[in-house]
Image 1 (cartoon, rainbow, N blue to C red):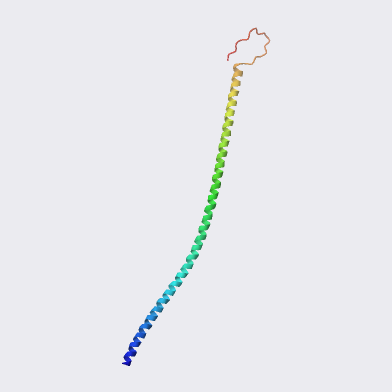
Image 2: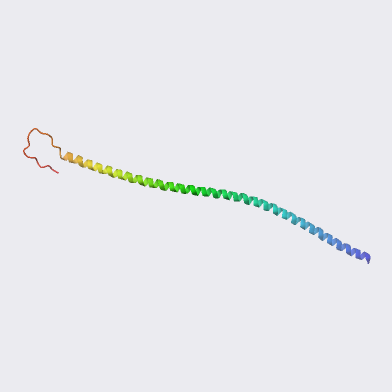
Length: 132
């Protein structure tokens, strides 16, 4: 009996030892996986920080471009106004010039169709009616 008891106890101890070393191995694997995940998490945090900085930089660039675009639009509107003002001035000058040319033509045609009286030595008894 005693040998059988010791034999049975040895089997139980062997089973427990085997289970213990299996559990120790699994625990070691889990510890390694956790360390890997912690390392990946740190890398992800660094990546996220870099991405966040890149995003901030891009956002600032976009904001600057939007501001610049607004300034350009304002300048374009100012230039359009200036162009309209200049066109109105040019039209006014052109109309004034046209008017002056018409007046000059009228004066010229009157002076060519109605010669100015020239001093003449012979006396004129009656002035002739002038064609209009």
